[in-house]
Image 1 (tube, rainbow, N blue to C red):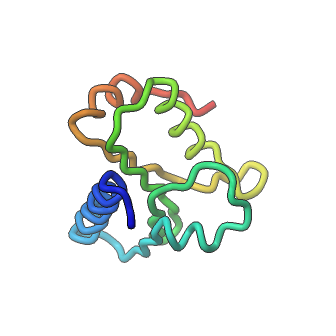
Image 2: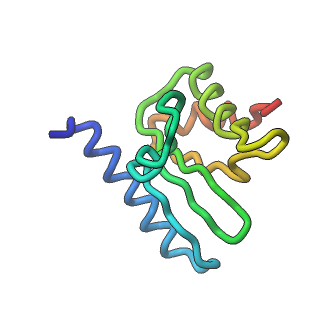
Length: 116
């Protein structure tokens, strides 16, 4: 049985998905963390909460409920934006980093993180 914190996280990831589905935009495909893990050959590294595919974009979705240190937040965002599928080809063209009131202030301070 999942822990209460895990259930809360699943709830908010699904709220993000419902919000994305309401947006008047081109069609997209949502791929859940569970599906991504099943497809993953190498079990190491950070798993995103979901991926959104739309036309030529692949967006990483990260839903953050717990406050992280500035260093941890920086590391997560850099990892997402630096991940490669081939030399000089980024895995993600965008990253959607969703937070709650407890973590928003930290994200605002870190929003200008260099990905280099």
